[in-house]
Each structure stands twice: as C-alpha cells, then as structure tokens.
Length: 380
Ligand SMILES: *Cc1c(COP(=O)(O)O)cnc(C)c1O
Image (cartoon, rainbow, N blue to C red):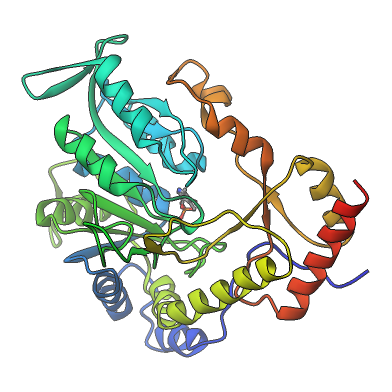
C-alpha cells in the first residue's frame, strides 16, 4: 500500500517561519502587533474591499457580521441546508431563527427557490419581509460559496434588494474566487453582499492555524465588528465598556502565518487548477465550477452512486476522501426549524465524495487516486 494521501492539509513552505520567528523575536505574539494590520490591509487589497477586520475564526467573523447587520433575538435568517454548520450556528448564538433553503447545481443557495419562498411563503409590508408561517421578520440571507464555487450572486442580490434583506457572504471556502463576466465582473466572493467572511482554518486554501477575516465596504459595519471583536472597549486606559463585546481578535502570530500564506495564494490556486484538470484528463469527472467565474478550485467533488463503498475502499488504500456534510436541517439542533422544499441538496448529499486536493498534492499522487477510483469503478 502507498503512503497516506490526505484530503486537504496545510502547505507552509513560503515565508511562514520567517514571519512567525520575527513575531516571536520582537515579542509581539498577542492581539496587537504590526502583522495584524498588514494582513487586514493585504486581504482587503487582494479582494478589492475597502476594509477588513481580522478575527479568531470564520465562525467568530460570521457571528460579528450578523450583529453588524442588525440580527437579533426573534429575527429570521435564510440559510442553506447544504453547508458546514458554522455558517448557521451564529444565527442561534443571537437567538434568531434559521429558515433552510435548497441548493442549485453550484451547491450554493438556489435563487429560484429563494424567490419562490419570498413570494409565496412571505408577505412584504412597509419594506419588511414577514414569514407567513411564523409571523417573524426575515432580515437577512447567509449565502455560502461552497467548495470554491460562487453562488448565483446576480439573482440573489436582486431578490435581496427587492425584499430589503441584508446579504452576508460566507466566503470561507472561496477566498480568491471572482467573477470574470456579467454585472459583477472582477468582483471577489465576499465583496458583493453587505459583508463577507473568510476563514483560515487548517483545511482552507490559506491557513493561520485558526483565524478569520471580515470584509465590507460599509465603514459602519467594519467599525462595529472591530469594536465588538476587542471586548467593546471604549477607553483603553480606564477600560470603559458600553456594550458586551467578545474576545475575537486575531493574534500577531496568526497574522504572521496569514501574510506569508497570502503571498502564495495565487500559486496555490494555480496548483489546485492543474490538479483539478489532471483528475479530469485522466477520466475522473469532477463537479464543474460556474463558467462565469475564476474559481479558487478549493475542493474537488466527484459524483458517485457508491459514495460510502468508494470512501471505504479508498480509505483502505490509504487515500482520504470525505462526503459532503450532513444537511443541517436534519441535525438535532435544527430539526424543528423551517426547511423550504429541500430536494437537490438531498441528491448531492448522497452522491458527492470529495477527493484529495491539497496544494502539496503531486501529479504522482493524483495518478494513484485516479488509478484506485478506476479499479473500484471497474469492479462495481
Ligand atoms: C470553514 C468554514 C466555516 C468556519 O470557519 P472556521 O474558521 O473554522 O470557524 C464557516 N462556514 C463554512 C462554509 C466553512 O467551510
């Protein structure tokens, strides 16, 4: 049996050690220090947002983004069911309620169902959208760009504008993805809605070990997120706090890693693209990215009727793969929540298996994975 081929692991062969060493040598290791603002600045510049706020995780970023958008107790937020649970939990942190929406073939939120839901299951009165069933106000949509693809932002933004809904983009998996045509040409995932969030968890396209970033062109949102991420401190000498804040700030150590990783992001994307093409040219069809975008090629999704058997077979060959997440509306904390006409998400849940996609993945390793999948397909 060959060596272990992981699904998605960090690649730290740039200036990471230099920058982290510098942070340690200068003893700026905590939530202040020059790398933090440099990292914020460089991310904002890279994605074309006016400002960014670095925080401890993507989840923390989403929590703050929801607060900035005015989500509070008893409000409703439309969310995808096909996503990682961290996109939804922050709604509950605020004692607001999720309404689950289906996906389209990009795996992100289906704009047609979203529109149908707003039209048929809600009423719009004095510029406020109310859910007929619950009577509650719907304030926002959390759009998640799944696996490096882009949601149909043109349609989703139109619907959001029509019904006065805020749009929070969970772009944790899509840093580097942008439109190459259409009305959002050159716009990056995370910069189209009201506020966007990235994650630098260990399995993401760039990593800080753990970390996140909020971006927005709305100065008020940015200031509010920065304030709340640093314990809502109104006076740094006398420690006055007018609100309840959070300890969500990123550390200079994390930012040191992040800066070095960001320098390599475009080369990571090009490696991921090469490997993505490589799988396909060897006869392994992968889920397509929207053709109006330059994706970041984060994850490679293979569709199979034999998901569990193939997963087990590859695992026996020392190859790590992963099914899609269990749909959130079927999980215990969310079983009582409203789910609108979920169909496609069920299909993709049953059929997607994600294949090794690290930026460390070599051509030889791709060949090994391809060979094992072909063997499995031939025998089943
Ligand atoms: C990774 C991820 C998050 C959370 O990011 P963390 O930094 O791990 O908190 C949120 N949403 C989605 C879709 C993710 O993939």
